[in-house]
Image (cartoon, rainbow, N blue to C red; front, top):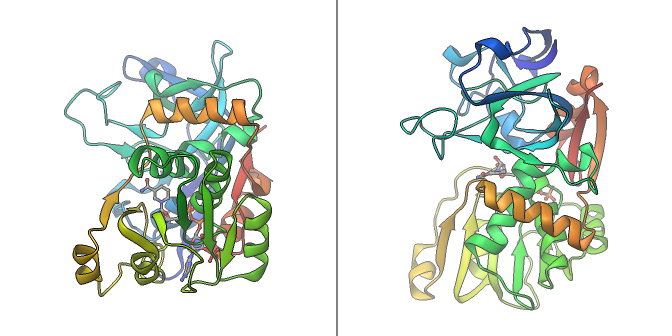
Length: 323
Ligand SMILES: NC(=O)c1ccc[n+]([C@@H]2O[C@H](COP(=O)([O-])OP(=O)(O)OC[C@H]3O[C@@H](n4cnc5c(N)ncnc54)[C@H](OP(=O)(O)O)[C@@H]3O)[C@@H](O)[C@H]2O)c1
């Protein structure tokens, strides 16, 4: 079957290690007990795939590796499913001793015609969502959901700053936050993306580092070094910064004095659990909110999708369709 594979990794030129290859289909008879094969109908790209191609979290001995964390598809018995991308956190399908991993770290990922996962990881796809929409959810949207509602515990009327409007996580946070009645502020380096964020429900959109009209109850931080200082200055005393990424690197200095003096809580978030994913699906069905898809390409053209993601010009998700 066709797959987008990390054949090599390169810190400086991550796309140079991306290859479209024929790989073996998962052998249902050889899978561990309680695993299923899913025919992928749509997958989506994440910054995680670029980190993998840089060798972050993907050591040489794991190569070649099928990339991709996110998928929606159909099981052998005809069920339409969304794939929860976290394997090992609960022991389902792998036993209690295995460390948590995301698809494409230890097990082959979703950018292929088929993917094998623990059956427990399959969540029913609501009929209201298309495969392309559902494929946007398991990483970026799930993380944004968890940051807003599980980690920061934001309530309607609360104020939140989302750093970096255009990204997959950030655009999800803007849309989910607005749908939940939050007052959402965003930053973006790009004026066009700031405009888009306003149409997606943000109340305020400013350049990175600019003063906000309010102090935020919480800040969602995935950009890292480029925005950290602004995050610390923008949160109210006693507020929360939730960190789920550091695209521009680890910040230095950490602004520790301001953090302790104003009693800011800094929380880490990674993905979300299956219950978060099920709640996210219910929220989209009830609210009518749908992921913003920047670009959709067929699997054969996955490298074009990767180029779009690496350009940093996208607003929302890059989707890959199969079949
Ligand atoms: N912990 C987890 O479970 C988890 C889950 C998902 C993602 N992540 C991490 O979160 C980060 C974002 O992921 P994603 O998939 O949403 O990535 P993405 O779609 O590629 O978005 C990248 C974002 O970074 C911003 N950005 C990049 N470089 C910047 C810079 N130098 N200065 C300011 N902003 C910059 C962009 O904002 P503008 O262009 O609008 O300024 C954009 O919002 C990644 O590091 C990823 O690994 C972690």
